[in-house]
Length: 436
Image 1 (cartoon, helix red, strand yellow):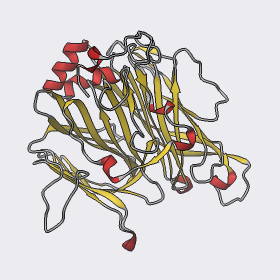
Image 2 (cartoon, helix red, strand yellow):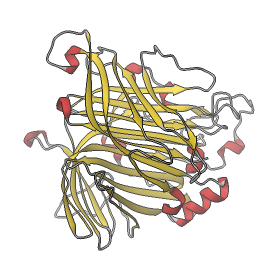
Image 3 (tube, rainbow, N blue to C red):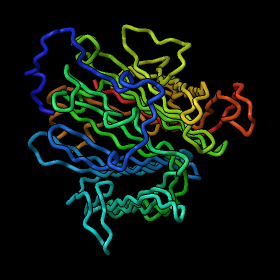
C-alpha cells in the first residue's frame, strides 16, 4: 500500500465505492475462517500501520486484567512499541495502570536451548511473550507465556491458553478473510488502507500478577485479539464498539463483538457516503465455538429486525459528556444471530443490554481514557496534527445477564432442535471509542 495511492487512482468516478467491508465479502456460511499459524504472526509493517495483540481476562475474584503490546509505524520514523497493563477491582474500584515504551523489541526472539521461535513470539527488554503450539500427544493447549517487568510496581507471569474446542477465527475463509479495505481499488497493492481482526474468543489464564508488592493469583477466563490498522488510526474509523462477555455457567459462555464506523469519505458511493458500520462477533456456548456473526450496516439501508444473521451494537439514551464533548450512551444493546458452524442448525441468537449510567451516576465505568495522553509522541503528533481529533475510550465492567436462544440440542443434552431460551450471568467488559 502506498500512502499516495488514492491520489493516483485511475478510477475517477466520484460515486465509486471507497470502502469494502469484510462482512459483505463472504456469505454467512463462510464467516468462520479458522486461523492459520501465520495469521497471528507479527507483521511489523512499515508506512502508517498500528498492530496490536491484547489479552483480556476476568479472574475468579472478579478482577479484570488486560495485557497489550502495540507496534506503531509512522511513515519514515522508527517504529515505537508499547506494553500496556491494567488491573481493576470492581469491588474496591482500585486500578493499576501501566504504559511503558519498550526497548529492543524483536520478533521472532533468538532461539534458546535449541528451541526455534516464529513471529508469534516476541521479546523486549521489559517482557517476553512466547507462543506455544498445541501438542495432541499430551493434550497441551495452544498458549502464550507472558512474562513482564513493567517497573518496580508491576510484574506479570501468566500463561494464556486456548481450549481445543474453541478455535481461533477471522471473519471469512482464505487469505482475504478478515480484511476490510479502504479506497477505490481494494487489491492489496492498490488499496488506501485496511483493517483486520483475528480472535481467540475464549481463553483461560493461570499465573501470578504482582502490583505494588501485592500478589494476585491470575486464574480466570477471557479472550485474545490480534488487530492491524493499515492506515493512520484517525482515518480507520470515527467510532468503535467492543464487547467481551464471559461466563463460567453452562460449561463456559462467551459473546464478543468488534464494531467500527467509517468516516464520511469511506462508503459505498464515494465521498459523503460513509458512516458504514462493520460488526464482527462470535458466540461460545458450552465451551464450544457455536457461531461467528458479521453484519454491514449501510447508512442508506435500515437493518431488518427479522434478519437471520445479526451482529449489532446500538447506543440508547445518549447525552453529551461535558468532560469529553462527545455524545455518549446511557444504555448499549448488543445482538448476535447466526447458524451453528458445525451442524448448520439455527438460529443461534443472543442479546444483552447494559446500563452504563449517566455522567452524574455512572455504572461500571472504569475510566475515560484520553488516547492522546497514552500513545507515543510521534503517533500523537501525526493524529492530532492531521485531524484535530481528541479521541477517548470509555471502558465499563458490569455483571449482567446474557439471553441466549438456540436449538435445545446446542444448549443441553436434549436431542430436540426446538428453540430454547436460557439466561446466563457473567461479566461484560465493553468499550465505546470516539475519535472524531
